[in-house]
Image (cartoon, rainbow, N blue to C red; front, side, top):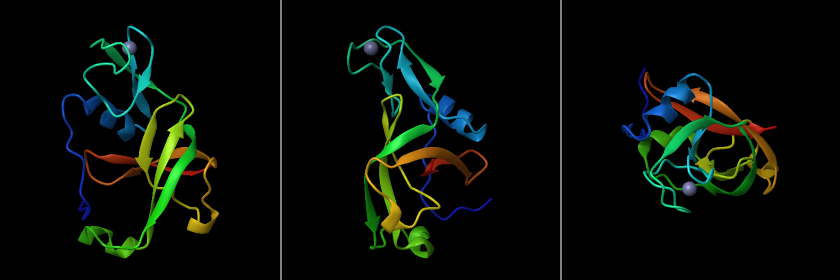
Length: 134
Ligand code: ZN
């Protein structure tokens, strides 16, 4: 599989997330001490500083927190997509993640719009999480 866009580096700390997305599951870290859900992965909880956490599956449902439309080309691989949106989605469980809204014209994307996760395999190791209208 050939993919022209930048890909995330999979580390020991993020490997569980990428294994889950390959299986079509969205996961975030939950602090074992205080229960706070967090994303992206971190080695300690930013609330209680505990280093103990587990990856837990979330619903994949959320709302658009913010979004914009990119018209300028920063990476050659994105050229066929111009213009494209970049959105910040707040999961129902709390964490926010940067993503793209797919299957929705830019003029129909709204802040607070309900969305659900969809999974886009782009390489043998990486399946990206994007969102579409719920
Ligand atoms: Zn905590």
